[in-house]
Amino acid sequence: MTIPQRMGDLSGGAGNDTWLDLPAGKIGTPSSADIAILGIGAATPYPIGAYCMDAPDTIRQALNKPDIFGHHDFDLAGVDASHTTLPAGISAEDQGNLQVEDTTDPDKTAANRARISAAIQAMLDSDTIPIVFGGDDSIPIPVLAAYGAMPSMSILQIDAHIDWRDEVNGERWGLSSTMRRASQMDHIDQTVQLAARGIGSARPDDLKAALEYGSCFHPMRALLKQGGSAAALADLPAAVPVFISLDVDSLDPAVMPAVLGPSPGGIDYWQLMDIIETAASRAPIAGFAMVELKPDRDIGGHGALLAGRIALSVLAIIARQRAGGK
Image 1 (cartoon, helix red, strand yellow):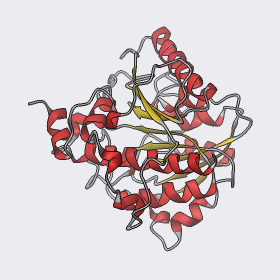
Image 2 (cartoon, rainbow, N blue to C red; image 1 turned 135 degrees about the horizontal axis):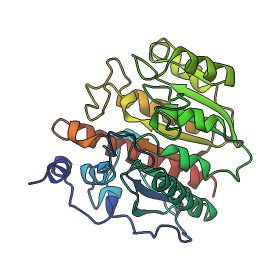
Image 3 (cartoon, rainbow, N blue to C red; image 1 turned 180 degrees about the horizontal axis):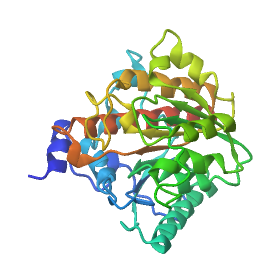
Image 4 (cartoon, one colour; image 1 turned 30 degrees about the vertical axis):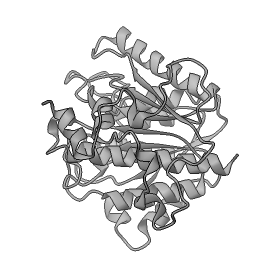
């Protein structure tokens, strides 16, 4: 029995062709769906390789009950029996996995990025909100680039690391440079960065550059203070579309062991739910990416199951927003 099968068994997974038995969509074509899932295994790997390439399918298998939308969800609805996970009139689809290459060849990584941006652009042209299953943290760079026609948007980054390196051994588009590259995009108005902790790749000059740019930092210790999360999310401009970029190493390794660089003292599932729901109360969610799940570091499939639960919660939160706007 393979590891993905065992992960699916934890929650009654049935090995469906699409996540949660959603209708299958086609990458790069017009869509009528309100929300679309897209798996992206890599964009610009470092020499270590695309170590999260199998994460999208692992997330799908970890939580994949085919009839899940007919069940009551206590996380999202409490004891309100009239509240459904996917509201009537709101549609979602799974477009499968984008074909990308695990390579450090500059021409091929540029092709990866172009392919990613084109796939996201096709969704946006159809007024479809993307939910991206990554893959490493270089993936949000071309995803965010696809929003270039938007006059203004914010980024809510939830990550143990600030990702402000200008380059790493000459590579400017890798996972340690995500927020630096985003800051150079004309359509990005504000960046709010939550949950930084420990020691990552950032040097003092990287932090200085981020502060000079105007990024709003709320490290993990600040979030733990009374009212810390509320204060952090008050920095999100009200009513301005926000893209949420979640690196799962922001979560405490006790609940999310499946990461490359675990660091003690991260957020838990309920704290994350509160952050995302509060963000959604302030601004429309324009897209979501979950990155850095490393399946071969998982313990008993628990990290993958948590990633699947987060993805379902985000799908439901975005669906509520879409329902409210129709």
